[in-house]
Amino acid sequence: MISNQRNPKNKTYKTGIALSGGGIKGLCHAGALKALDEYGIKPDIISGVSAGAIIGALYADGYTPDEIGEIFYDITFSKFAKIQFPVDGLFQIDLFKEFLQEKIKARTFEELSIPLRIVATDLDRGRTKVFEKGTLIDPIMASSSLPILFKPIVINGVHYVDGGVLKNFPVGTIYPDCQLIIGINASPFVAKEYSKSLRGIIGRTYHFMSKANILQDKALCDILIEPENMASYETFDIEKSREIFKLGYESTKEILYHSNKV
Image (tube, rainbow, N blue to C red; front, side):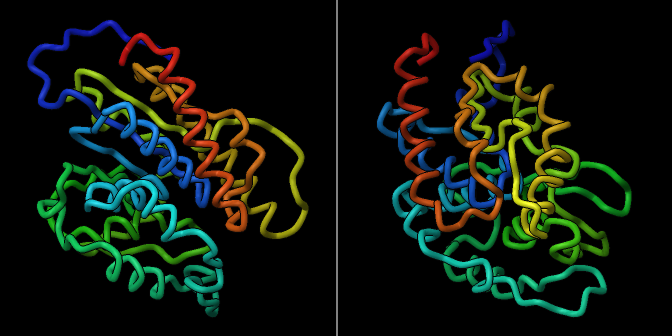
């Protein structure tokens, strides 16, 4: 837990929650949100990148954390990623877009019950883009479009990829507007053993790439939830989704129990 001394006056929101990227490890967020719910802590605004954008959108759309977990238990990568001739990405993700359109009732940010900010990377200009108004699904897809694996998402003529390329922990996008910041980082940086398979190499490369840009944002958190054991899971360990949810829940309960911020 890192506490920051700042003037809480004139803040638009009381409590903001930032959700990192991390692939299937994002189910850690759902577990953490369940623990926060049990403590009566409800976010007034959510910021999410990649997996955090997906979990944040579902939560802001009215799903309970347990319902979010059920959505992703027992899914397979091949169910949503269709291989293609690699012109701009190895896989198409049109099926995943259809899946999200089916699950998420809101069609715009304005229809969500909780304000949401989604972070993507502007590939054309080399900068972070924060979406918070207008059409919802395309920004979620953009924030989750891992380079090489998936093709960039074009929004208003601009090519966007995974927000984690430049900002994998989007605390700074809500920090100026909140009295209290809770950050949930599903991807702690630990250089551990890894599989030498293509999937393992891609996962580790993305792990290193996305960890380099989170330190500053971690320091902005009033309450930092970062389960160390999450490092034992890979980005695409889909078969371990239930374990990941449970770890997020149990770690958050323990942190909240010892926190003097709630």
